[in-house]
Image 1 (cartoon, rainbow, N blue to C red):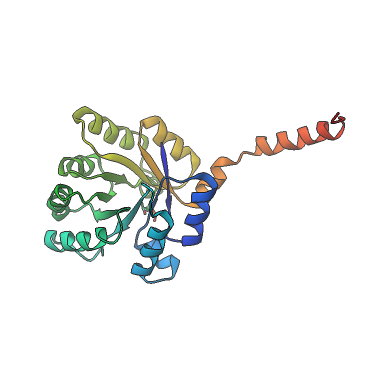
Image 2: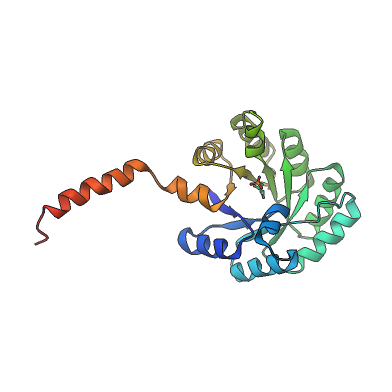
Length: 220
Ligand code: E4P
C-alpha cells in the first residue's frame, strides 16, 4: 500500500520523504493556504523535492472552475509544469468529460471530493488515474466508511478499471488499517497521523523494561 503525505508544507514533505519514504503527496487549497505562500510557488517547490522520481503530487485546479473547457485548460497548464503532477478535479458532472479528454492526452487526474461509490464509479468510467474518497469528512458526520471504501475497490476490480483508490482525509491509524484491509491502493494523511500510528505505548514500555535488564547485564 502506498502512503502519501497530505500537506503543502515543504519542510514536512522533505522530512517524510527522508524519514519514511512516502510515495507521493496530495495538496488541496487548504493545505496551500496553510503553507502561507502563493499557489504556484508552493507547487513548484514541492515538485523540486520529487524531481527525477516517480512519486506523484496531486495539485488541485482552482475550485471556482466549474466548466469542462476551463478545467481542461487549467489542467493542461499545471500538468506542463512537472511530470510528477496529477491534476485534482472536483467530482462534479463537468469534470467527467474533462477527465476523459485529459486521460486521452496522458494527463493524469485525481478525482477528488468523492463521497459516494456512484461518484467513484463514474470517475473511474471516465478514466481517472486516482479516485479520492474522503472518509474523514464522512466520519465527522457519523457515517460508516469501511463499506464505502470496500464498495469502490470491489467496483474497480469487477470492471478492471485502471484507477487507483486513494483514501483521503484520513485522521488516524485505524482508518489506514481499514483502508488496507479493504484493498485500497493508497492512503493520504497528515504527518502526525503517520508518526502517531508508528508509535505504541506498549513498545515504549517494553523499551523501558529491556533497558532495565540491559543495564544489569555485562556486554562481554
Ligand atoms: C486529499 O487529497 C485531500 O487533500 C485531503 O485528504 C482532504 O482532507 P482534509 O480534510 O484533511 O483537508
